[in-house]
Image 1 (cartoon, rainbow, N blue to C red):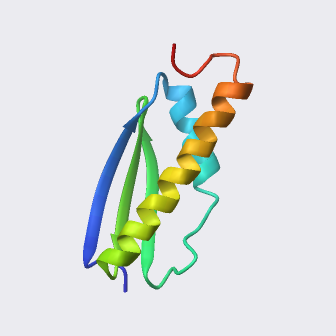
Image 2 (cartoon, helix red, strand yellow; image 1 turned 30 degrees about the vertical axis):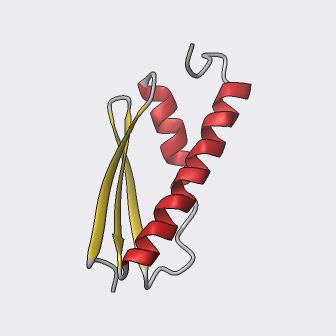
Length: 88
């Protein structure tokens, strides 16, 4: 049923490797209510692309917020663990 409300998000990263790491890590987490929300993660160069489709605007908002929290956690891990520091 997801699909009435959609959103495409592009998040730039310093390099292709970091975008791919975050994409691979985050793509393991499936939406809790798959009948209300779906998302597709891909990379294009050094950008993470996310397509959301939801049955309601509320489901879309909650799904996007959750995804941004997860991406934030992944970025913090890159910053702490990656030899190529994230950002300056």
